[in-house]
Image (cartoon, rainbow, N blue to C red):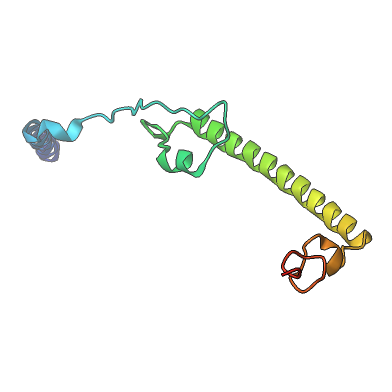
Length: 128
């Protein structure tokens, strides 16, 4: 019986200590996190540039980033990378075709280039 009495007294003392500590704690420690409702906008009618990414701040929710907006950003960047890769491939193909055409046709000789040299008889400087 005495053991049960001591256990009851220990529980009451522990509960009073817990209540005292909680009551004396400053209220600032129990502040709940606030949502960051900053606007999150991507340019819709133009391609993204480096400055868009440098100034972009993804809004923070109670537990990290908002997944839907982060997924939108990743999808947009992936689409722009695909567009740029296709454009680079197209431009490389055009450049390769231009090089191939230039290699097939003979280039003008130095005298046929249309630039007159001062030491040729048909140049204005030669008549002086």
